[in-house]
Image 1 (tube, rainbow, N blue to C red):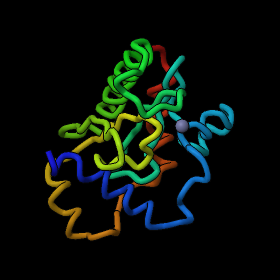
Image 2: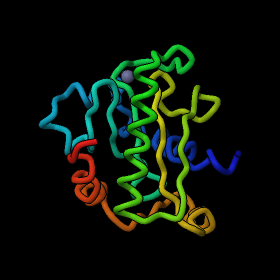
Image 3: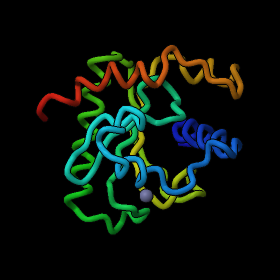
Image 4: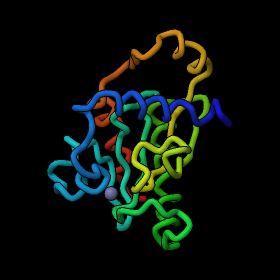
Length: 168
Ligand SMILES: [Zn+2]
């Protein structure tokens, strides 16, 4: 389990160490509120009724996505059932799109609830959807804090976006 969840904790710890990367407010609230015309800037792939999907700005792998509700809450136990159901459905859609575009070997899906669990934004729930390839945990620690990703966030966005524009 430790190994499974460590990657995103590390990514957020790295981001927290760079003060200029810290958002002034909750970016999971602010970014969708900025308007649909800013979606490419904020890497928002899809807007549902209650939830949306976006690229993680500090990806563990190319195609590391987040699914979050518009509602600002860290309380998963009391999340309303409709929002919870839409989060699950959108996570499925992310897996389908990533499978089509990246053909990963496997996925990690999960939430970190609370700072002690590694949540970088503990007050706003989000599910991580991370495509995995055989061996990706083996070479990452060797690279230390420098992440070498095979493509930019813009490229990832442009490749995935069409797969979210078709009907559900
Ligand atoms: Zn928020």
